[in-house]
Length: 338
Ligand code: KG4
Ligand code: ZN
Image (cartoon, rainbow, N blue to C red):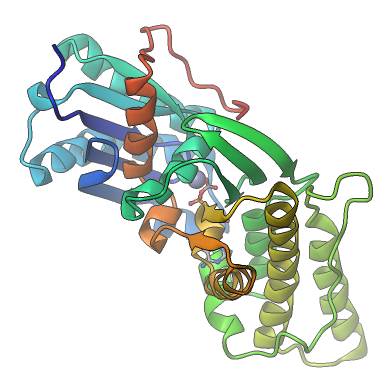
């Protein structure tokens, strides 16, 4: 007989955050520890994979111990250990996967591998206790931009994806070009508040044969061309105007695609996920648009939008209930498909 509560220890190390969490029954976060490497990578202007892996190795045991301590639990209380096994940086993923396998082997707790993007989507369940599939979700992170229908727990239908740069990648590259540095998203979000979103008419790219696909590399090039032409003409660049106008161009496309999908599929619930989902202009625009269309809008708090292990614990809970268990042959899969 299964005991009533399901407790999951979750581990996440796919990029530059070493994270561990204890999650009860999928939606109750008992602890959520995140050790960020941002400062370490800032001097290089982006994540250096080898440094990320080394730092994960240094931090992971400490972060897991802290997560259990804060939850006032021990490994023996856990029903499963969950870990992100892809997509992400292979060296970084391997640290989490190896650690989770070692914990599972040593303690006899079952192992559950989780898809990182599934984790981001599931972050919506943590604070929205009533949210249930089906709904449409826009997943926008540093490596991915997907518009998906969440048919059921763990069942996704992908409507569109990016053809080139991910939304977060565009934020990071533009931030670098205008001298804001890494990580670009939060910095552009902040600086944009001082600028005019209508100052520079940057393009809103459409992919001709796929209405839900995204393309951000043309926008990035347009920003670079604008900066070059200002330099050549000796015109001073207003950093805040570029940030605000670029951000508006991204937000407009994300909102337009999302609302198109919501209307076409007739679903009354819409959610966002991933690091870029913490962008204040995107959140405001979606609150407004969903409100106008009578769609219920869901978004995780910013701390659950960017990489964390609580979302991995939530996704793992629904896999656990379906009976999913992984063997010790679980490997890191850097390009794991949704
Ligand atoms: O989901 P995430 O933490 O990691 C990945 O799975 O990629 O997303 C990181 C991305 C970065 O590109 C970062 O610049 C972006 O999310 N980001 C933001 C904001 N906060 C983080 N982009 C726009 N506005 C923000 N406030
Ligand atoms: Zn992520």
